[in-house]
Image 1: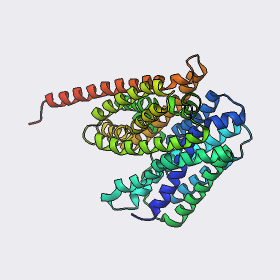
Image 2 (image 1 turned 45 degrees about the vertical axis):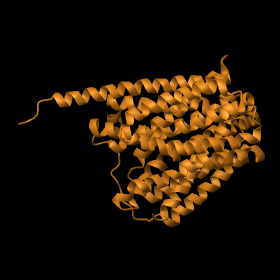
Image 3 (image 1 turned 60 degrees about the horizontal axis):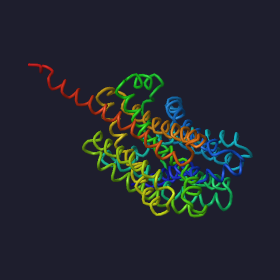
Image 4 (image 1 turned 120 degrees about the horizontal axis):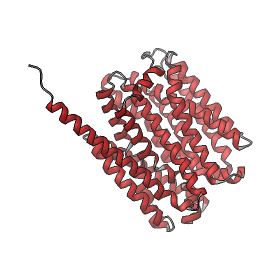
Length: 397
């Protein structure tokens, strides 16, 4: 594997850290800016919405730019956004900074995956893309707990300044290691994306992604306050618990990929059912430390286990219903993931602000996941009906 993939992985590590580290810092940010927890949770929603809207639109607008200069420009925007967050005097400026970073996020992974595949022979493309995305997984395991620890000891602004430094390292690596001559794939315009959104089966798959994946974020967004105020962990212990959660995510992602290889719909149905059960259980175990840790490990293992299956299923559906726009459908599914995060964080904030309170976020998230399960079963039934129709269709002589 070429060293250029390391530069892409470091950049992905920085981007993954800045996306999820706010979860561990939510109580700290809320106290420092004198805002409520639901208002602090909007920082998560705004970032995810920035990725949801920015990824498809900016990818279309920048499709004709050369790959390496575009990647360097994206890292520049990312660093600027985190620097602005690191000096934000108030809540409003922090939101602007998060949107700026989010715009770079969505396009980076779209362009970065193309570059990673271009750096290696055809038979190693999947491994190259996986290596780049490993930066995102490692960020959840190490970057988020480390960033949380920095924020708790030196202030949350110091975390974003540290992330901007990581972005500089990633950008320098891209400048030094990524070759100038890269293939220029055909640009996918806004029209291509609208045509994909006009396919009912693909819209159903995007809804499965948003509900099934996003349901966990109803509770995950407010995990730090739950651990501190309900479970009784100290402020400094939360970062250690996030290490456990991140490690479980990494394991679950690998296992989920293997389960989805044969039949993604069947795998997703089981994973969603288990995830809903674990979220319901966490609503009852959150007030006891050991049971809470055990439940959190299961919750983490299942939270991202559905990601490979969701992405694979969308690709399979696109090959049948929009064969000329498989890449566009895949990119729109990334937007659906982030739409789920935004919705989960928003509705989690509404639950916290309601009489139900913070302790209800896990079971409300479980209801979201059950919605994703229901849509998965519906989509699987439609698949089987299509197969029967094809089998019964008269064959040409």
